[in-house]
Image 1 (tube, rainbow, N blue to C red):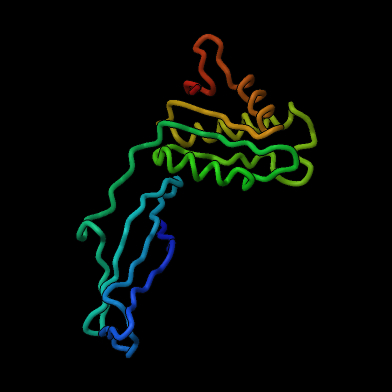
Image 2: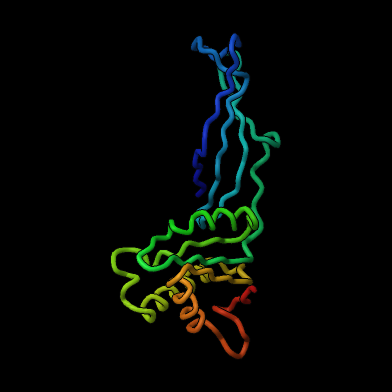
Length: 182
């Protein structure tokens, strides 16, 4: 099932402009909505929509006529961002946005396995093992992935190195079945 999330609403109005919205308000010729369609697997497809008002009724039209939204190519790259001591996944949200802009088809994942009270204080083995489990589950959900990059801040970097140790296959040189990026 698809889920429609409303990203924002802009109403175009100019002074002295009267719209035919049927309620006597002064609306501009279009109401613009930006929406994000996201499928159950968490990958979104952006679709710009315009709502036109006129004659007392509104009609919804997509940017490319009434065509269905295009589907994205399956993700090939996985970036895993790991926070540091006493941190939270949101600590790396800015980096996540930057990487997503750079490569919109990639999955940029904020690791959540070590967030919460005292989870970063129980040692490298436990934190790295939790991270390796989270990465394994993520790879299993997205079989189209080919490459992986782990980015850690402070203690998150040490967790990432331990997780790589657990996921590395010496014979193939792959990490969790994926090629490591430089």
